[in-house]
Image 1 (spheres, rainbow, N blue to C red):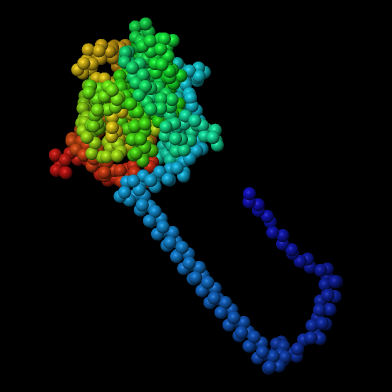
Image 2 (cartoon, rainbow, N blue to C red):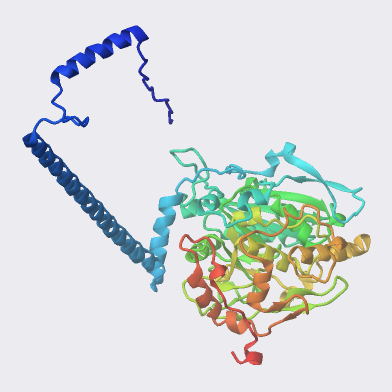
Amino acid sequence: KIHSAMTDVVIPIAPSSKNGRDEARSRKKKSDKKAPSSNGSGVHSDGGESRAQRLAVRRKRVANARARKKTGWGNMISVFLMACGIFAIYALTCMVFFRSLSGKSGSTVSRIRGLIKKDQIENPPVPSGIPIGIWPVSIRDEDGNFEEIKHPGYEDGHVTMAVPRFWADDPVAIHENKLMSRERALSIGTCVTVDPKTGTYTRGDACPVSERTIFVAIASYRDWQCRDTVTSIFSAAAHPDRIRVAVVDQIIAGEDGSCDAPHSPCSEDPSQPICKYKSQIDVYQMDAQLAVGPVFARHVGHRLYRGEYYAMQSDAHVTFTRGWDGDIIAQIEATGDEMAVLSTYLTDIEGSIDPNTGLSLRHTRPIMCNTEYEGGQQGKHLRHLAQPECMPLIKGMPQLQPYWAAGFSFSRGHFVATTPYDQYQPMIFQGEEMSIGIRGFTIGYDFYAPERSVCFHHYANGANAPKRNRVKHFWENSNQYAGSGVKAMYRLLGIVHMNPEIDGEMWDHIEEEKYGLGGVRTPELFYETFGIDVVNKRTEHHLCQFVETGNMHKKFMSFLRPDGMGIDYSQIDYRFKDPLKHGR
C-alpha cells in the first residue's frame, strides 16, 4: 500500500506592533555596540587586514566548490561507465542463450525448450473463460446441462434438439483473438490423477505422459463397424484408463445396432472392452432421419468434449495398432509445437496390421498436400484429392503440411475448444476440411503428417467391399433438406473468405464469431503462401513437390516460436509457385 501525506509548513507569525518595536530597539542597541566603524559611505569597515582575511576565505570557498563540482562529474561518469559494462555483459549473455535456442542441434533445442516448459507451466492456474477440468467425466452426469437448439436442416426452426452444452461455450474467450500464451494453453487438459499439492486435475506439463487424458470423437451414420472401432480403441491402447470415447450415433432404432452395444451381453462376457470401459463411453444417439451430414454430427461431437488433455477425431470404421495412444502422443510431443495438429487420410486396413502382434506393417504414411477446386450444385470449392503415401523424409518427428483431414486428427484438447464445428452447416460433405483447417490456421494451429500410422481405415475395397457397400449414407435424407446445403456452403466459404464474389447478405451470419476466425493469421496469408487464387478459383499445381520432399518442413520449422506456441508466419515470406510452370 502506498500512503500519501501533506508536509507540515511552519509559518512565523509577526509580533504585535508594541512588542515588535521594543524587540527591534533592543536588537538595534545590541548591534550598535558591536558594529564596526563606518567609512561614511554606508559600508562598514574593520580594517584592511580583516578584508584580506575575508577575501582569502572567500577564494578558498570558491576553490572548494569547484573541486566538489569536478568530483561530482567524475562520480557520474564512473557510474555511467559501470552501468554500460553491466548492460553489455547482460546483452552478451542473452545472445548466447537465445542463439542456443535456435541452434542447429535439434536435440539441444528440444532439451532447452523442455526445461522452459517445465519451469513455466507446472500446475498452471485456470484463467478466466476456461472451465475447470475434472476426471473421470461423462455427459450422463449432466442431465440438467443440456440445451435446446434449432435443427439446422429446417429453416423455420420448428424442429429442435436437446444437446449437451459446450464445455467452453465461447471459443473466443479462450483464444481471445490473439496468440494464446503457453500458460493459457496448458491450463486446458486433465490428468488421470490429481496433483497432490493443489488437488487439481489440470497439471500442465507436470502431468505424467501416461496419465494425460484423451478425448476421442466419432461421428457414425448407421455403421455396423462403429462398436468394433470403439473396441479397438480400448483394447489396443497401452493405457485405456485415460481414454474417453464420445460417439454421435445416427441410427434407426430397432434396425441398426447401437455403437455401445457389445457383441455379447456384458453379463455373459464382462471382459469385452465395451463392457469393461462402459463408464468411459458416451453415446449421443440421434434419429438417422435428422442426420444432415458430418459437419453437424461432428458439431454435436465437439459438444461432448470435457477438457481432456488430447483430442482425437476418427471415422467409425477404423482399426488401431497396439500401443497407439503412447505412439501418437510421443509423435505430437516430438514436434515441440503446442499448436500442432497431426492429421491425415488413413491408409487402407488391408495388409497394414500384423494379426499376431497388432503392430503396423507399414513404413509409409500419407501426407496432405494435394487439393483442387471442384464445382457442383453448391458452387466451386476446394476439396482434397488422393494424397501421396511415401516413406517420411523427415525423421524423428511428424512432418509439416498445409492441410487438415477430418478422417483422423490428433491434437491438444484446446484445438476442439477453440475451433468447434459450425452448427449452421447442414448437408455439407466436401468443404468441411477446408473450413476447420483454415479457421485453425488463423487461430495459430500448425498441421503435420504423422511419422507413423497408428490406425487404418476400412474402405469399400477388396475383401471389405461387400460389407462396406451395404452401409447407408446421410444423403439418403437429401430430399428432406433440399436447398439447405447451398446456403450452408455460402456460409462455410464466406467465413474463411473463399468466395469474395458472393454478397455477404446471401448467407447467414448467426454466431459467426463463435464459429469463425482467429486473430493470429489471416485466411489471405494461407492462400498467398500455398498458391490458392480464391478469385479465379485456381491453385498452383504440384504443391506436393514442396511438401512431400520436406522442403516446407525445413523452411518453416525454423520459425517455430521459442516457447513452442506455433510457427511465426509473420517471419515467412515464402510464396509457393508451380515449379513446373515457373521453373523453381
